[in-house]
Image 1 (cartoon, rainbow, N blue to C red):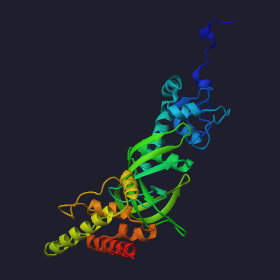
Image 2: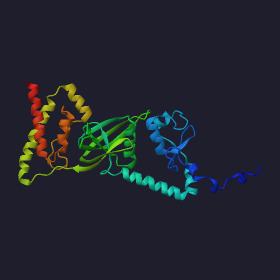
Image 3: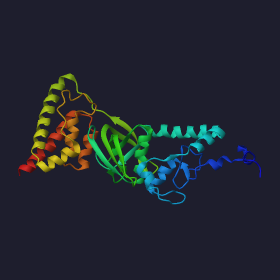
Image 4: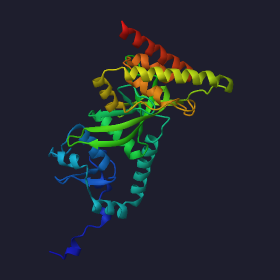
Length: 314
């Protein structure tokens, strides 16, 4: 028996592959250890837990980890790697940062949630339970963009050619890995390329903005704007109280009239609120998202409101 110093193994004899994550087969990055004693990269473990709340190696239940969303960082492992494998760590960090940069791009391979119609300025609460969307939302938070695209489904292409960027305001996680995302509509976009990444849809996109009208036409636009606003306001107030309360709790109150209807590249917020609230099929709502003319949008809303009031008076 030698002294404890004599038992030390020189690090040259330790195979760097001993410090590889068993899930991604790469050098541990942000290593975390489960209560059952197994170590993985944080991102790798999170992706496994999206599908199953058990340790990937011994199948021990990890729902408590999921509930708290706090993982035990393996400091000693990090220090070992930093000390003895500095070059490998630098390379691993570079790969990670490249992946994050790629995921942060809001023009190319933008994550697309295929679900419902979303509009600029309008709140869009979402219940996330599918593993691919758990991953997608987490990435949006990790990259710091906190943004993703929302499109309705399309039987041929998978999702529609037009959509709206949603910005995450808050995420509430549950013990079983599900979450509720509070998001709000930002910019409109046109899809130029449909694609996929890690099980969810992605797209290359171009942003859409309203074309401003010239000075001599502004007066007519203002008259149209004010009259459609009043018509929408009257229609909403004519609804029965239970329906009105449901709309208010989901979408908030109708936004005020805009002094300058052309101030925003998306036009007035109240138009989008009205479109979100009107009982239209999503196929009928989609063209409004694509319109670059506020006048066309206002005329379209007026036609729908007129039709609604006619059917009610019958």
